[in-house]
Image (cartoon, rainbow, N blue to C red; front, side):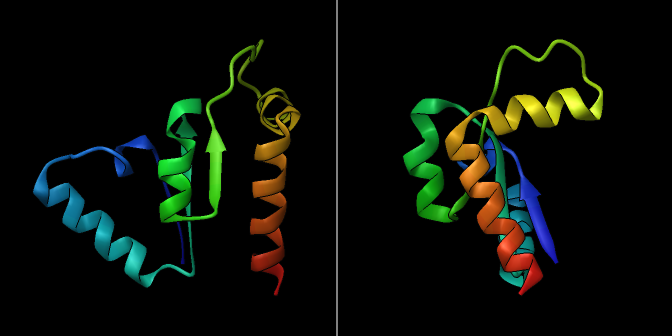
Length: 89
């Protein structure tokens, strides 16, 4: 199972939600944290190597535009490539 969470994984959220996230993470072979602000990347990397930073400048929200905007960032591209390598192995 792949678990994709957002920045709420980094913040102190309700104990019930934190417990749910902990269970999801425990049973996942990989955890991705999505929409991380630039200042929170190091905190996110302490949890998982698969961090996707929040991007701006998306002109429309069709698949190709979103993917293109995300992959323009070299750290995002590297994180996604590492995740794909893990999935393929």
